[in-house]
Length: 523
Image 1 (cartoon, one colour):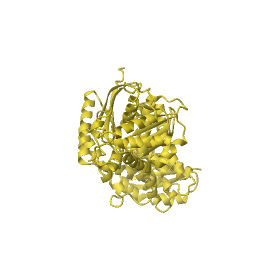
Image 2 (cartoon, one colour):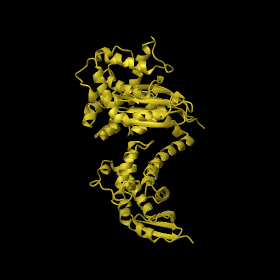
Image 3 (cartoon, rainbow, N blue to C red):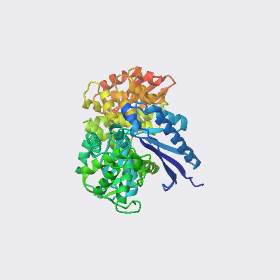
Image 4 (cartoon, rainbow, N blue to C red):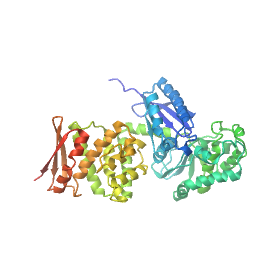
């Protein structure tokens, strides 16, 4: 039997300031070799945060660099591509334009991720190298172009994780005049810092609530600042094991402020592509240092793209893959508990929904796969959380809560689909004219929502009394126009019978089949 060949995978991090590609050849046993690690400036967020749109010029820059990376990856044997986009893309009203351009032009599917998922991936990437022992907590900081992620944790777990809307490009766009390329006064720098604190104060104030012994920076901004701080007392470049103090970083920042943009280019590690935004990034970092005091500071060249690699390797490991699925499930359960959901009812509806899904696949009502099955599982668990706000319109409230919860382990599309499925678990039936969020999705995704929310509607109807009377379910197709659903119960359930029989019209609209429901009470 021939050995299973290695797989070459390209991991793309499409950020607000730059695009990065990590290309690895991965063996079946999970060992890997890095073939190349590329980075290019794309300035995707330039001019976006005020207008709320990615400019056409920025999209073209991203496509140009993306094309270069894809061609390089294919030349080196890449057969799989994993791409995520962060702050600039997730906040843009025209983000679908970028996603579609990449798909149609380069054949790459971009997954837009939340700030919390971005933080999780950064954490996974950094600890893959840092090797923090249990109890040896560190504050991990990544200052991007549009957002900053802060995580406190160790090798085993994270204790705190958050993403805030402050980034080097965002703060530069908001507080710096592009025509003013001279030195920056202390007064102007304090104005930028005030803007950072105004946006991030709640997150910053929580940092001291968790113990940590050092800070690890994983972004270009922090790497530049630590490099300059290190050079104050050493002639050689900073190494991974080197540490600097907060006082040295502040001194390096003052060195930058005293120089014009043109003069900054001559500083070690600071190139022309970062010279105009380094002040905004420095203001963010100094605000963090103001809050935490003096701890040893080091840098890591690992980040989000390495987190994508770790996730990929985990998916190859059946045991670890189950742990990762539980990670997503735990995130869903935390949201449910925060919203004080009925745990027992939610679990029963989830169980019924998945039974309906599996038997619907056998009856050829749906094309089954693990991804859509998991979407239904999570939507079913959260279908009633809107009652936390109000019973009236609780489906719409569920959509809002799920969309804004930043569930960990999910990309933005998955969260959108889960939210829509939960929203339509009762009336009304999803319609493009009445539901703009639903209408914004493409036709295949709208089909997924219709089918899965129909199964969820049936499950909800079959626990009308919240007494878990239904024990089993089975679809059977009778030709191509009729389907029978046999419902096994542990006792009389007249309310469930009435409720499920009201779903016939919606079922026929969804699956193009007439539904007959038969109840079978166990003796």
